[in-house]
Length: 354
Image 1 (cartoon, helix red, strand yellow):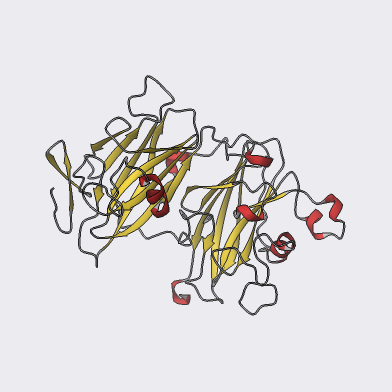
Image 2: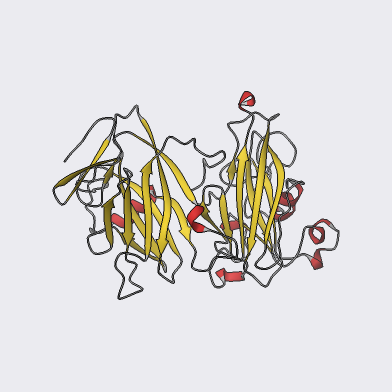
């Protein structure tokens, strides 16, 4: 195995290629440096040819063989162990709304030096691990790597069902992404900022849906989605409680209400306050007003990031890139295209209020 401290090499088919990772088994990437080193990598979509909705993820392994707690890849129990460690990178849509450019999306992830990684693809509910038949890794002249995947949907695929690039970066981590990639982590995490700081947001909204949907954000006190209703900083209403919908609406950010015409693009600006976690909610074919009046019989369906708060207990929000969320508006998962509404957010914060 080739290792170079500070920079990273790759061993592909016994040929050492200088780059940003070491890869002794054609599918294991090792972050260079010591455990005291923090390395950021940028992952971008290079292309896609499949008609499937795919989700890309990554997990850390324990050694050069890819073992997890002594279990080798392919052995019984490996998938469960891998997914318990996994971080979702992004979902890749198969039908993008007008104006939405997936090639402009990216995720920036940070790892400790020495971390060893494997990637996986989730396609049609199946987990596809990297192997010589499902994944092809090539070096880039710019110093990173390209990974091409076969997802099994096309007999003529030449590792082009999904193509991504991976490269070390010195870019700052985007604001608010701390929970993104975790299960039910489609949220803006601003807990590192003081409660009197204003984080400016620029919102871009896209739509590919017949329903006229509305996206807002509400504040929660913890990663589980608990809502503080009396201002003491602890959760009073939990996900699954009968009053969760009303509590979420009461804790919404009043300056953020996002909607756009079908195949249109909308842009707006508003602010978040530091010191909390902000989670999106989707109002189906309606707006906020019907949820604020005293007539509950006209309330539209509302879906949340947290499955336990949804009437159908299914997923309605996916991460598409840093601070970029795709929504599914049909009950029961519908067509699972997650392009009914897409919200992309750019956040800036005053550094003096950290």
